[in-house]
Image (cartoon, rainbow, N blue to C red; front, side):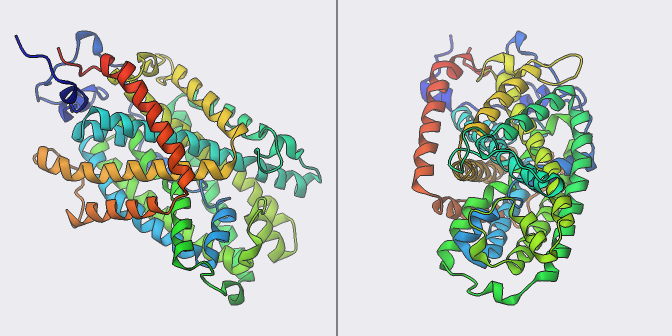
Amino acid sequence: MASKATLGQQVLRRKPVSVLIEESSGDLHTDTPLDPPLDADAAAPHLRRSIGLLQLSAIGIGATVGTGIFFVLNTAVPVAGPAVVVSFVLAAITAGLTALCYAELASAIPVSGSSYSYAYATLGEIVAFGVGACLLLEYGVSASAVSVGWGQYLNEFFSDAFGFTLPDAIAQPPGDGGYVNVPAMVLVLLCCLLLMRGAKESARANATMVGIKLCVLVLFVAIALTGFHSGNLRPFAPMGFAGISNAASSIFFSYIGLDAVSTAGEEVKDPHRTLPRAIIIALVVVTVLYIGVAIAAVGAQKWTLFEGQQAGLAQILRDVTGQTWPSIMFALGAIVSIFSVTLVVIYGQTRILYTMGRDGVLPPRFAQVSPRTGTPIWNTAVVSTGVALLAGFVPLDVLADLTSLGTLVAFSVVSIGVMILRRTNPDLERGFKVPGYPVTPVLSVAFCVYLIKGLHPLTFAMFAAWLAGAAWVYFTYSLKHSRLRAH
């Protein structure tokens, strides 16, 4: 009779890559025996592979462009000054190093769950559950933070087009003159309804919205550069490098879309090739746009005017042109863009919960898939309710920093996972390999740790409380119900 596994062995048990792939949708198979075997009743419902390269790239771009650039400048520029451009470059370098690591793992383990699944295969169950908790914080809070800004641009559009605005009491978050952000909650409800219709339909709608937002941001850069004044760039770094670093830490959550691509691993056609390509495409497009918009914005408006500014980029266009039509078009584009971001981020969170439910570390109802739409409807409703409550009642600055910390922790784990998987599964098929290995993943971890150090101490306290709650869930439920529990 086999001896019972110790607590240490149980919490550090790893899920073999063969099991992860076998559980994914039906067109991928493995000849490797499942060890340890899953229970007979553990057969998981499959998501449908219906997403191609263009739609997947749009998911990455859609979850990234709009998270930061439409409203985070109002909080980042007062911290870094015009040198916020350097902050975006620093964040982009960190994201770029991590994107290469994501591309390798996504091509080798093309399943839902993102860095949660990667950690399960490389670092063990308790680490994976902690990463899953970080991802839930990252996605849920990010969706809330982004949807908070939707009401600002909605009011900007109403003001310019129709001459009225919604009352601050129902259009602003607490701390900014509001009591409950009703537009943000309405936005989350609309995204919920679209996601319940199906992943393919949601991906098509998102691709259309991404096209609109790219056109709008290019329009902003073109118009804002006509009002560019070099004097607005002086002093370039009024808060020194510390300000640049702190701003980079705060805005890093705007690169969440790179992780969102990997959450679609089980719904992508030809995932070994499509996933890494989509991650790289999204990174390049997003970085160019972020830096271009940041340069145009700080060149067209004095950096001291950004703080507290509502719908700041639309205001810049109005000031540069002296007309309302550019700001009306931009506000409309921002409304569409923020809808797209919220849609994709909620989608990503539901797929992580789906994977955790299938693994048994969360209740199995999270993994229930509708036979009609091929989507986890109950899961989507729960996520959307939580996001709507956060968006309606929690201040924006708190949301942004929490999201950055969750994102950086998840990105660090992915980079470490690449190195572990190279040692434990050297012969595993990889559609992409990190160039400059092992220097690239080591640098990725170092940059992530550096940006984590720049966050506010209160953020760490709230993050620690979140992880303590996650540990309680793990030891009271997940440890006993995990599909990989000792037999």
